[in-house]
Length: 62
Image (cartoon, rainbow, N blue to C red; front, top):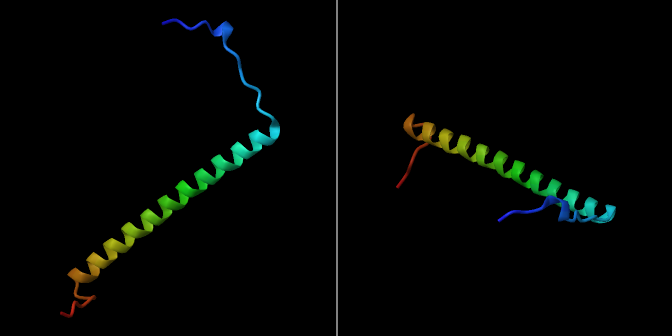
């Protein structure tokens, strides 16, 4: 299958809609960054809990 790029149409999006898309993508990027930050904090916490358990700094009481 061949595509003739001379026949393709490039859509023109109004500036208001472009801004809305830009804001949505920025929110998505911020969300992903926050998820990454939380995941890192969770991994650090899990490691510290493991360290506390193996060094008897955290006691388990039945």
